[in-house]
Image 1 (cartoon, rainbow, N blue to C red):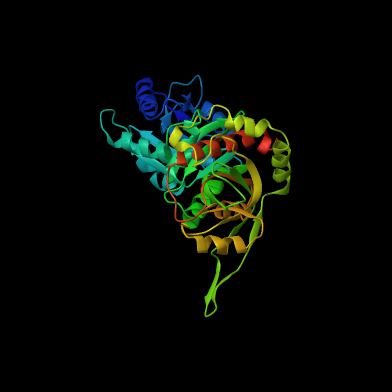
Image 2: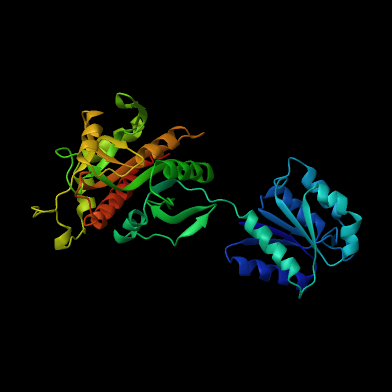
Length: 393
Protein backbone atom coordinates (compact mmCIF):
# COMPACT_ATOMS: atom_id res chain seq x y z
CA UNK A 1 0.00 0.00 0.00
CA UNK A 2 1.31 3.46 -0.97
CA UNK A 3 0.61 6.65 1.00
CA UNK A 4 1.55 10.21 -0.04
CA UNK A 5 1.96 12.75 2.78
CA UNK A 6 2.11 16.52 2.20
CA UNK A 7 3.34 18.16 5.42
CA UNK A 8 5.90 20.89 6.17
CA UNK A 9 5.79 20.63 9.99
CA UNK A 10 8.45 18.10 10.97
CA UNK A 11 6.90 17.25 14.33
CA UNK A 12 3.44 16.76 12.84
CA UNK A 13 4.86 14.68 9.99
CA UNK A 14 6.64 12.44 12.50
CA UNK A 15 3.41 11.93 14.49
CA UNK A 16 1.42 10.99 11.36
CA UNK A 17 4.11 8.62 10.10
CA UNK A 18 4.31 6.97 13.53
CA UNK A 19 0.56 6.34 13.49
CA UNK A 20 0.77 4.83 10.00
CA UNK A 21 3.68 2.59 11.04
CA UNK A 22 1.67 1.34 14.02
CA UNK A 23 -1.12 0.39 11.65
CA UNK A 24 1.26 -1.49 9.32
CA UNK A 25 5.02 -1.47 8.83
CA UNK A 26 4.51 -2.62 5.21
CA UNK A 27 3.01 0.69 4.06
CA UNK A 28 5.27 2.74 1.79
CA UNK A 29 5.15 6.45 2.72
CA UNK A 30 6.28 9.12 0.27
CA UNK A 31 6.60 12.62 1.75
CA UNK A 32 6.81 16.16 0.44
CA UNK A 33 6.89 19.57 2.11
CA UNK A 34 5.63 21.88 -0.62
CA UNK A 35 2.86 21.98 -3.21
CA UNK A 36 5.19 21.79 -6.19
CA UNK A 37 6.72 18.46 -5.16
CA UNK A 38 3.32 17.17 -4.09
CA UNK A 39 1.74 17.97 -7.46
CA UNK A 40 4.51 16.15 -9.36
CA UNK A 41 4.25 13.02 -7.19
CA UNK A 42 0.45 12.97 -7.24
CA UNK A 43 0.44 13.18 -11.04
CA UNK A 44 2.98 10.40 -11.61
CA UNK A 45 2.41 7.63 -9.07
CA UNK A 46 -0.72 5.88 -7.84
CA UNK A 47 -1.40 6.13 -4.09
CA UNK A 48 -4.12 4.35 -2.13
CA UNK A 49 -4.30 7.19 0.41
CA UNK A 50 -3.17 10.81 0.25
CA UNK A 51 -2.80 12.90 3.44
CA UNK A 52 -2.45 16.66 3.09
CA UNK A 53 -1.96 19.75 5.21
CA UNK A 54 -3.89 22.75 3.88
CA UNK A 55 -1.26 25.37 4.78
CA UNK A 56 2.11 24.61 3.16
CA UNK A 57 4.79 26.41 1.07
CA UNK A 58 4.12 26.58 -2.67
CA UNK A 59 7.69 25.94 -3.78
CA UNK A 60 10.78 24.08 -2.64
CA UNK A 61 12.79 27.12 -1.55
CA UNK A 62 9.86 28.99 -0.01
CA UNK A 63 9.26 29.30 3.75
CA UNK A 64 5.94 31.15 3.57
CA UNK A 65 2.88 28.96 3.95
CA UNK A 66 -0.22 29.38 1.79
CA UNK A 67 -3.74 27.98 1.94
CA UNK A 68 -3.53 25.42 -0.87
CA UNK A 69 -7.03 23.94 -0.52
CA UNK A 70 -8.31 25.04 -3.93
CA UNK A 71 -5.08 24.06 -5.68
CA UNK A 72 -5.23 20.56 -4.16
CA UNK A 73 -8.82 20.24 -5.36
CA UNK A 74 -7.73 21.30 -8.86
CA UNK A 75 -5.07 18.57 -8.91
CA UNK A 76 -7.62 15.84 -8.21
CA UNK A 77 -10.27 17.30 -10.54
CA UNK A 78 -7.96 16.46 -13.44
CA UNK A 79 -9.23 13.07 -14.65
CA UNK A 80 -5.80 12.39 -16.14
CA UNK A 81 -4.28 12.53 -12.64
CA UNK A 82 -3.12 9.11 -11.45
CA UNK A 83 -4.93 9.74 -8.15
CA UNK A 84 -8.19 11.26 -9.36
CA UNK A 85 -10.08 8.52 -7.49
CA UNK A 86 -7.75 8.06 -4.51
CA UNK A 87 -8.88 8.63 -0.93
CA UNK A 88 -7.74 12.02 0.42
CA UNK A 89 -7.55 13.07 4.08
CA UNK A 90 -6.78 16.67 5.11
CA UNK A 91 -5.20 16.95 8.57
CA UNK A 92 -4.85 20.61 9.52
CA UNK A 93 -4.04 22.50 12.69
CA UNK A 94 -5.84 25.56 11.40
CA UNK A 95 -9.64 25.40 11.31
CA UNK A 96 -9.82 28.61 9.35
CA UNK A 97 -8.15 27.00 6.34
CA UNK A 98 -10.67 24.16 6.39
CA UNK A 99 -13.67 26.41 7.02
CA UNK A 100 -12.88 28.70 4.10
CA UNK A 101 -12.94 25.86 1.59
CA UNK A 102 -15.10 23.29 3.36
CA UNK A 103 -17.74 23.16 0.61
CA UNK A 104 -15.15 22.79 -2.15
CA UNK A 105 -13.27 20.07 -0.24
CA UNK A 106 -16.49 18.27 0.60
CA UNK A 107 -17.61 18.20 -3.04
CA UNK A 108 -14.26 16.62 -3.94
CA UNK A 109 -14.85 13.98 -1.23
CA UNK A 110 -11.85 15.15 0.80
CA UNK A 111 -12.28 14.41 4.51
CA UNK A 112 -11.12 17.30 6.72
CA UNK A 113 -10.02 16.66 10.32
CA UNK A 114 -8.45 19.02 12.85
CA UNK A 115 -5.02 17.83 13.96
CA UNK A 116 -4.38 18.11 17.70
CA UNK A 117 -1.35 16.00 18.53
CA UNK A 118 -2.49 14.42 21.80
CA UNK A 119 -6.12 13.91 20.77
CA UNK A 120 -7.48 10.58 19.51
CA UNK A 121 -9.98 11.95 16.98
CA UNK A 122 -7.54 12.41 14.08
CA UNK A 123 -5.89 9.06 14.82
CA UNK A 124 -9.24 7.23 14.62
CA UNK A 125 -10.08 8.86 11.30
CA UNK A 126 -6.62 8.10 9.93
CA UNK A 127 -6.87 4.43 10.94
CA UNK A 128 -10.33 4.21 9.37
CA UNK A 129 -9.03 5.71 6.12
CA UNK A 130 -6.09 3.30 6.09
CA UNK A 131 -8.37 0.32 6.63
CA UNK A 132 -10.75 1.32 3.84
CA UNK A 133 -7.90 2.14 1.44
CA UNK A 134 -6.04 -1.17 1.65
CA UNK A 135 -6.08 -2.58 -1.90
CA UNK A 136 -7.24 -6.14 -2.44
CA UNK A 137 -4.31 -8.37 -3.37
CA UNK A 138 -4.27 -10.12 -6.72
CA UNK A 139 -3.48 -13.83 -6.78
CA UNK A 140 -2.37 -16.07 -9.62
CA UNK A 141 -4.52 -18.90 -8.31
CA UNK A 142 -7.21 -19.75 -5.76
CA UNK A 143 -7.55 -23.08 -3.96
CA UNK A 144 -11.08 -23.63 -2.67
CA UNK A 145 -11.65 -25.96 0.30
CA UNK A 146 -15.05 -26.82 1.75
CA UNK A 147 -13.70 -27.91 5.14
CA UNK A 148 -11.00 -26.66 7.52
CA UNK A 149 -9.40 -30.13 7.51
CA UNK A 150 -9.09 -29.95 3.71
CA UNK A 151 -7.26 -26.60 3.91
CA UNK A 152 -5.09 -27.99 6.74
CA UNK A 153 -4.00 -30.74 4.35
CA UNK A 154 -1.51 -28.31 2.78
CA UNK A 155 0.18 -27.71 6.14
CA UNK A 156 0.11 -31.41 6.99
CA UNK A 157 1.73 -32.10 3.62
CA UNK A 158 4.65 -29.88 4.69
CA UNK A 159 3.94 -26.82 2.58
CA UNK A 160 4.49 -23.32 3.93
CA UNK A 161 1.12 -21.64 4.37
CA UNK A 162 0.43 -18.13 5.67
CA UNK A 163 -1.66 -17.37 8.71
CA UNK A 164 -5.42 -17.16 8.34
CA UNK A 165 -6.71 -13.68 7.49
CA UNK A 166 -10.16 -12.42 6.53
CA UNK A 167 -10.31 -10.45 3.29
CA UNK A 168 -13.72 -8.95 2.52
CA UNK A 169 -15.38 -11.78 4.44
CA UNK A 170 -13.32 -14.59 2.87
CA UNK A 171 -11.11 -16.79 5.09
CA UNK A 172 -7.77 -16.83 3.26
CA UNK A 173 -4.32 -18.33 3.74
CA UNK A 174 -1.58 -17.28 1.33
CA UNK A 175 0.59 -19.90 -0.34
CA UNK A 176 3.39 -19.72 -2.92
CA UNK A 177 3.72 -22.54 -5.45
CA UNK A 178 6.34 -22.58 -8.18
CA UNK A 179 7.03 -18.88 -7.67
CA UNK A 180 3.33 -18.03 -8.10
CA UNK A 181 1.38 -16.53 -5.21
CA UNK A 182 -2.14 -17.77 -4.47
CA UNK A 183 -4.50 -18.19 -1.56
CA UNK A 184 -6.42 -21.05 0.02
CA UNK A 185 -10.04 -20.02 0.67
CA UNK A 186 -12.03 -22.07 3.17
CA UNK A 187 -15.82 -21.99 2.82
CA UNK A 188 -17.91 -21.22 5.93
CA UNK A 189 -19.92 -24.37 5.21
CA UNK A 190 -19.70 -27.27 2.80
CA UNK A 191 -22.13 -27.57 -0.09
CA UNK A 192 -22.87 -26.15 -3.51
CA UNK A 193 -24.38 -22.82 -2.45
CA UNK A 194 -21.58 -21.68 -0.14
CA UNK A 195 -18.93 -22.87 -2.56
CA UNK A 196 -20.49 -21.06 -5.52
CA UNK A 197 -20.69 -17.82 -3.52
CA UNK A 198 -17.11 -17.82 -2.23
CA UNK A 199 -15.70 -18.92 -5.59
CA UNK A 200 -17.51 -16.11 -7.41
CA UNK A 201 -16.44 -13.55 -4.80
CA UNK A 202 -12.86 -14.82 -4.86
CA UNK A 203 -12.68 -14.51 -8.65
CA UNK A 204 -14.13 -10.98 -8.59
CA UNK A 205 -11.79 -9.81 -5.80
CA UNK A 206 -8.50 -11.49 -6.66
CA UNK A 207 -8.63 -11.87 -10.48
CA UNK A 208 -6.90 -15.30 -10.55
CA UNK A 209 -5.79 -17.13 -13.67
CA UNK A 210 -6.59 -20.51 -12.10
CA UNK A 211 -9.18 -21.76 -9.62
CA UNK A 212 -8.93 -25.27 -8.21
CA UNK A 213 -10.45 -27.38 -5.47
CA UNK A 214 -8.80 -29.67 -2.95
CA UNK A 215 -10.49 -32.05 -0.55
CA UNK A 216 -12.25 -35.37 -0.09
CA UNK A 217 -14.91 -37.27 -2.02
CA UNK A 218 -16.71 -40.59 -2.33
CA UNK A 219 -15.70 -43.10 -4.99
CA UNK A 220 -17.88 -45.41 -7.07
CA UNK A 221 -17.13 -49.04 -6.21
CA UNK A 222 -15.09 -50.65 -8.95
CA UNK A 223 -14.08 -47.27 -10.39
CA UNK A 224 -12.08 -45.69 -7.55
CA UNK A 225 -10.64 -47.01 -4.30
CA UNK A 226 -9.84 -45.39 -0.96
CA UNK A 227 -7.09 -42.74 -1.39
CA UNK A 228 -7.36 -42.59 -5.19
CA UNK A 229 -7.30 -38.95 -6.30
CA UNK A 230 -10.00 -38.12 -8.83
CA UNK A 231 -9.60 -35.08 -11.06
CA UNK A 232 -12.98 -34.00 -12.41
CA UNK A 233 -12.66 -34.23 -16.19
CA UNK A 234 -16.36 -33.49 -16.51
CA UNK A 235 -18.64 -32.57 -13.63
CA UNK A 236 -22.42 -32.44 -13.21
CA UNK A 237 -24.94 -31.82 -10.43
CA UNK A 238 -26.62 -35.13 -9.65
CA UNK A 239 -29.55 -33.71 -7.65
CA UNK A 240 -30.71 -31.11 -10.17
CA UNK A 241 -34.00 -31.93 -11.83
CA UNK A 242 -37.70 -32.39 -11.07
CA UNK A 243 -39.77 -34.32 -8.58
CA UNK A 244 -42.96 -35.55 -10.27
CA UNK A 245 -45.57 -38.29 -9.82
CA UNK A 246 -43.06 -40.55 -11.57
CA UNK A 247 -40.44 -39.81 -8.94
CA UNK A 248 -37.21 -37.90 -9.39
CA UNK A 249 -36.33 -36.97 -12.97
CA UNK A 250 -32.75 -35.69 -13.25
CA UNK A 251 -31.85 -32.81 -15.57
CA UNK A 252 -28.18 -33.13 -16.40
CA UNK A 253 -25.83 -30.28 -17.29
CA UNK A 254 -22.16 -31.12 -17.72
CA UNK A 255 -19.21 -28.77 -17.31
CA UNK A 256 -15.88 -29.91 -18.70
CA UNK A 257 -12.43 -28.96 -17.54
CA UNK A 258 -10.90 -26.40 -19.98
CA UNK A 259 -9.37 -28.40 -22.88
CA UNK A 260 -5.90 -26.82 -22.69
CA UNK A 261 -5.69 -27.59 -18.96
CA UNK A 262 -6.96 -31.12 -19.57
CA UNK A 263 -4.17 -31.66 -22.09
CA UNK A 264 -1.59 -30.45 -19.56
CA UNK A 265 -2.93 -32.78 -16.85
CA UNK A 266 -2.98 -35.73 -19.28
CA UNK A 267 0.64 -34.93 -20.09
CA UNK A 268 1.51 -35.05 -16.37
CA UNK A 269 -0.42 -38.32 -15.92
CA UNK A 270 1.49 -39.94 -18.77
CA UNK A 271 4.57 -40.01 -16.54
CA UNK A 272 5.06 -41.46 -13.06
CA UNK A 273 6.43 -38.16 -11.76
CA UNK A 274 3.10 -36.78 -10.52
CA UNK A 275 1.95 -39.80 -8.52
CA UNK A 276 5.48 -40.43 -7.21
CA UNK A 277 5.62 -36.84 -5.89
CA UNK A 278 2.21 -37.24 -4.26
CA UNK A 279 3.06 -40.53 -2.56
CA UNK A 280 6.56 -39.48 -1.47
CA UNK A 281 6.80 -38.81 2.26
CA UNK A 282 3.16 -39.67 2.99
CA UNK A 283 3.20 -41.89 6.08
CA UNK A 284 0.10 -43.77 7.28
CA UNK A 285 -0.59 -45.13 10.73
CA UNK A 286 -1.90 -48.68 10.95
CA UNK A 287 -5.48 -47.49 11.47
CA UNK A 288 -5.28 -45.38 8.29
CA UNK A 289 -4.86 -48.42 6.04
CA UNK A 290 -8.18 -49.59 4.55
CA UNK A 291 -9.29 -53.04 5.66
CA UNK A 292 -7.47 -55.77 3.76
CA UNK A 293 -4.95 -53.34 2.23
CA UNK A 294 -1.28 -53.94 3.01
CA UNK A 295 0.30 -51.46 0.62
CA UNK A 296 -0.19 -47.76 0.00
CA UNK A 297 -0.67 -47.41 -3.74
CA UNK A 298 -3.11 -44.62 -4.69
CA UNK A 299 -3.85 -43.70 -8.31
CA UNK A 300 -4.62 -40.35 -9.92
CA UNK A 301 -7.64 -40.61 -12.20
CA UNK A 302 -9.03 -38.08 -14.69
CA UNK A 303 -12.71 -38.99 -14.88
CA UNK A 304 -16.36 -37.96 -14.68
CA UNK A 305 -17.64 -36.82 -11.28
CA UNK A 306 -20.77 -35.23 -9.86
CA UNK A 307 -21.78 -32.91 -7.03
CA UNK A 308 -24.91 -32.70 -4.91
CA UNK A 309 -26.34 -30.54 -2.16
CA UNK A 310 -26.55 -33.27 0.49
CA UNK A 311 -24.22 -35.88 1.97
CA UNK A 312 -24.86 -39.31 0.41
CA UNK A 313 -24.78 -42.29 2.76
CA UNK A 314 -27.23 -44.62 1.05
CA UNK A 315 -26.56 -47.32 -1.53
CA UNK A 316 -29.79 -46.63 -3.45
CA UNK A 317 -28.79 -42.98 -3.85
CA UNK A 318 -25.38 -44.10 -5.08
CA UNK A 319 -27.05 -46.34 -7.67
CA UNK A 320 -29.05 -43.35 -8.89
CA UNK A 321 -25.89 -41.27 -9.25
CA UNK A 322 -24.12 -44.09 -11.12
CA UNK A 323 -27.03 -44.36 -13.55
CA UNK A 324 -26.61 -40.75 -14.68
CA UNK A 325 -23.24 -41.34 -16.36
CA UNK A 326 -21.77 -44.72 -17.24
CA UNK A 327 -18.24 -43.49 -16.49
CA UNK A 328 -19.12 -41.80 -13.19
CA UNK A 329 -16.15 -42.33 -10.87
CA UNK A 330 -16.63 -40.12 -7.80
CA UNK A 331 -19.09 -37.70 -6.22
CA UNK A 332 -19.03 -34.99 -3.57
CA UNK A 333 -20.73 -31.67 -2.75
CA UNK A 334 -18.85 -28.73 -4.30
CA UNK A 335 -16.78 -29.20 -7.48
CA UNK A 336 -19.69 -28.41 -9.82
CA UNK A 337 -20.09 -25.03 -8.07
CA UNK A 338 -16.39 -24.22 -8.59
CA UNK A 339 -16.60 -25.16 -12.27
CA UNK A 340 -19.83 -23.22 -12.87
CA UNK A 341 -18.68 -20.09 -11.00
CA UNK A 342 -15.42 -20.12 -12.97
CA UNK A 343 -17.15 -20.73 -16.30
CA UNK A 344 -19.57 -17.84 -15.77
CA UNK A 345 -16.97 -15.33 -14.51
CA UNK A 346 -16.51 -12.09 -16.45
CA UNK A 347 -12.91 -13.13 -17.12
CA UNK A 348 -13.08 -16.95 -16.79
CA UNK A 349 -10.03 -18.53 -15.13
CA UNK A 350 -8.83 -22.06 -15.78
CA UNK A 351 -10.27 -24.54 -13.27
CA UNK A 352 -9.96 -28.10 -11.99
CA UNK A 353 -10.79 -30.18 -8.92
CA UNK A 354 -8.66 -32.97 -7.44
CA UNK A 355 -10.22 -34.81 -4.50
CA UNK A 356 -9.16 -38.01 -2.72
CA UNK A 357 -11.59 -40.86 -2.05
CA UNK A 358 -12.50 -41.60 1.59
CA UNK A 359 -15.60 -43.83 1.20
CA UNK A 360 -18.07 -45.24 -1.31
CA UNK A 361 -21.12 -43.23 -0.24
CA UNK A 362 -22.69 -46.23 1.51
CA UNK A 363 -23.75 -46.61 5.13
CA UNK A 364 -20.20 -47.26 6.39
CA UNK A 365 -19.02 -43.67 6.30
CA UNK A 366 -16.40 -42.42 8.75
CA UNK A 367 -13.43 -40.13 9.29
CA UNK A 368 -10.63 -42.71 9.50
CA UNK A 369 -9.18 -41.87 6.07
CA UNK A 370 -9.76 -38.11 6.02
CA UNK A 371 -6.33 -36.95 7.21
CA UNK A 372 -4.35 -38.83 4.58
CA UNK A 373 -6.90 -38.04 1.85
CA UNK A 374 -6.65 -34.32 2.57
CA UNK A 375 -2.85 -34.53 2.35
CA UNK A 376 -2.96 -36.49 -0.93
CA UNK A 377 -5.41 -34.07 -2.48
CA UNK A 378 -3.34 -31.06 -1.35
CA UNK A 379 -0.16 -32.59 -2.77
CA UNK A 380 -1.86 -33.34 -6.09
CA UNK A 381 -3.16 -29.78 -6.43
CA UNK A 382 0.24 -28.41 -5.40
CA UNK A 383 2.10 -30.56 -7.92
CA UNK A 384 -0.26 -29.78 -10.81
CA UNK A 385 0.15 -26.04 -10.19
CA UNK A 386 3.91 -26.37 -9.73
CA UNK A 387 4.31 -28.46 -12.88
CA UNK A 388 2.48 -26.10 -15.17
CA UNK A 389 -1.27 -25.74 -14.57
CA UNK A 390 -0.97 -21.97 -15.07
CA UNK A 391 0.34 -22.74 -18.57
CA UNK A 392 2.77 -19.81 -18.35
CA UNK A 393 -0.11 -17.33 -18.60
